Image (cartoon, rainbow, N blue to C red; front, side, top):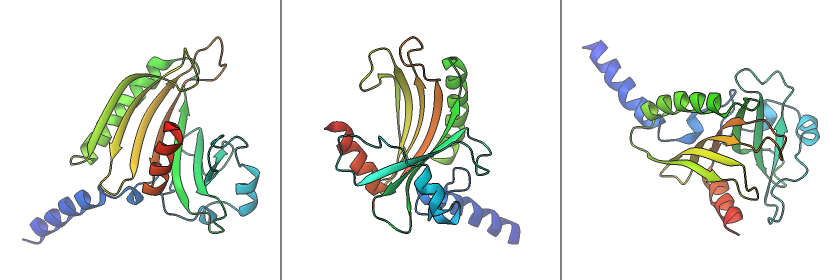
Length: 192
């Protein structure tokens, strides 16, 4: 009877947790965490991306981390923060894996992660976009799987296929988790 009760609690607990984006982590960091729990304020300031969200109201900015003891699974992190927030609460976090110029390997890894996410997010809306032209580029594409939470938060799993001749950027996979406020702001930013 105890085992049955434990299994019942674990099963329903995991479904409850799967509905809240802050219960998931990228390199141990969740949306809603203070970044100061992981790196110093000096490191945050040193890693601010200079062209964060150009043309926006600058409500948010992001930092990029490539050389850090934080990195175990990913080659880099991109973390969005609310401007003038002295607690540095994570609004969005993305982990990137680089694939040089091998988009097929990126798609294979993306499919593998997507299968795992489909097991976790059984009751969440998922959208698949097989090929989208990257905004501002004519020969660069992205392939995306997006998961929409009832709270307005969003999880995205995206492969970026950069035009090798013009962009000189490696193809990469980005798994990102965006809190509700940042998601709403980002949609507005890209639609303007």
